[in-house]
Amino acid sequence: SDEVLRAAREMGRLRLLRQRGAEEQLRAVHLGTEQWERLQTRLLSRLTTALREALEARDEARVAQAVVGFVDAGSAAEAEQWIRLEWVAPRLGPRLQHAARGGERDAFARVCAEVVAFARGPDFASLLAPAVAELRPPLHLLSSTVWLETNRILKTMPGVFGALVGVPSAFHAAYAAAGRVQAELEALLPAASERQYLRSHPATTDLIKRFNLPIYFQLRLQELAKALDASLPPQGAALELLSTKLPTDATHADDESSSERLPPPAGLLTVAAHTVVQVVTRCFAPDVYIMPLCSRFFRLALQLLLRFDSWATVRSKAPVDVGSSAQPPTPSDSRGSAAVDVPAATVVPRRNELSFLFLDCDTVTGWVRQTLQPSLEDVLGLRDAKPDLKGACADALRETSDVLAASSAGMRANILSQLVGQCVAQLAPARAIPALYCMTGRAVPTAPSLFVPELLRPLRTFLADCGVRLSVDDRHAWARDAGGALAKQYLHLATGMLDTVRNNEAAIRKYGAKKAAGAVDAPPAASDSDKVCVQLFLDVQAFGDQLRAVGVDAALLAEYGLLADAVRPSQALIESIRASGGSP
Picture 1 (cartoon, one colour):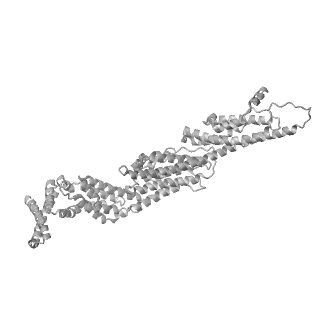
Picture 2 (cartoon, one colour; picture 1 turned 45 degrees about the horizontal axis):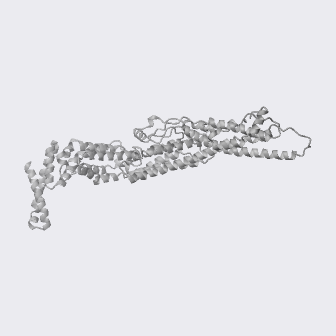
C-alpha cells in the first residue's frame, strides 16, 4: 500500500540519520536504537507480506512496488535473503532434487535445465520485470537468489559430480551444461554490469572449482595417445593398410561438426596416418575440447603429430624394396568417428611400406598446412584473442609442419636412393658387353641389349604403386631425379668399360707390330672397341626411350646428355659401318 511505501522511504531517511548519529556518538540516537529496530522489524514484516502476495498473484507491478519499498528502506539485502530462502528455495529445491534422480552421468545436465526453466518460469519472472531490473543500484536478484541457491543445493548432491570421475565424456557434457546454464541466465539480464556480476559471483567460481580440468585433460591425453600408439607398429612388425571404409553409423553428430571444420585428407593408405589425423581432429572436437584448456590441447595436438613423425622417420630408415609390383588397396575416405576407431586393415608387404608411408606422411603434412593451419583460430576459439597469442600459436604449428615436411623430404631421398640402387642393379648385364665382342669375331651390333627395357622397371613399378596419389608434375619429378641419378651411374660404368677395352686393344696392336713385314692384313671395318661403343650407344638410345616413356625428355636431362656424348661413336666409324652394310 502507499502507506507502507511512504513508511519505507521514511525508514530509509531514518537509517541514514541513525548512521550519522552513530558516527558522531549522539546520545539521543543511542537511546532510540531499540525503538528503531522494532519499527524496522514491523516494516520488513509488512514488506515481505506484500511481496509474497504479489509474487503469488504474479502481479509484476505490485512485485516491483514491494521491491522498491525494500530498497527505499535500505533493506535490499534483507529482500534478497527473503526471496532466496522463503521463495526460491522451497520451489527450486524439489525440482532440482527430482532432476538429479535417474541416470547419474547426465544428472547435472538435467539440473542445469531445471535452473533455467525456473528462472524463465512464472515463479521468478516477476522479479525480472523491467521495473525491478531498472532499479539503481541493481539488486542482482538472479545471481543472489537463484544462482546462489543452486550452488547451495548442488553441494548437497555429491553424487552429481561423483558420477563424472574417470568418465571424460560425462565430464565434458557436464562442463558444457554448466557453460550453457550460465549463458542462458546471462541472457535474462539486460545490463552488461549484471552479466559481469553473475560471472564474477562466488557461486560461479565455486561451481567451476568442482570441475577438475587437469584430471580431465590427463584422461583425454591418455585416451588419444593410447589410440595413436596402438596404430604405430614397432620396428620389425608389419605396417597395416586401410582396407575398408569406416562404418557410417560410428560417426556422431559432434564429430561430423568437427570434420566439417577439419575435413580429413582423402586417400590415406596406412592405419597409422589415418589415426594421427583422427586423434589430432579429436583434440578440437566439440565433445572433447574445453576452452580453458586451449593451450594444453593445442600442445597435445602438436605432440601427437611429432610422435607420428618421429615413428615414421625411424621406420623409414629400414632398407626395403620400394619397386615391387604389389598394389595398394582402395584408399579409405577417412571420416572422423566419435571414438578413435581403427577400421579393418591388411598387412603391407614389407617391400611396399616405405612408399606408402611416404605418401601418407606427405598427405598429413599437406593436411596440416592446408586445412589445420587456416582453421586454427576457429578450432581454438581465438577469433577475439590478442594478436600475440594468435601469432604464437600459428608459429608453433608452422614449426611443426616444417618438421613434418623435412621428414617427408628425408623419406623421399631415402626412397629415391633405393630406387636408383635397384635400377643400377639392372645394369649388371652391361658388364658382359666387352666379353661379347672382344676377340670373338662378332658382327657390329644393330639392336640394343635385352636388359635395357628392365632398367627403369623399379621406377615404373613405384609410380604405378603410387597411382593418382602423385600428381603428374610429381611423377615427372620422381622420374627425372631417378633417371638423372641412374644416368650418372651408367656413365661411370660405360666410360670404364670403353677405357678398358681401348687400352687392351692398344696393347694388342703394340705387340702385333712384330709380325712379318710382308704379312699385311686388311683392317677390319670396326674394331672390338668400336663394336662395344656401338652396343653402348644403342643401349643408351634405348635408355632414352625408356626415360621418355615415364615422362622425362632425355634431350633436356643433363646427366643423360653427358652419357650419350660419352658413348657416341665417331662420325668416321658410323660412315664406315654404314658403308659395309651395318646400321648402328
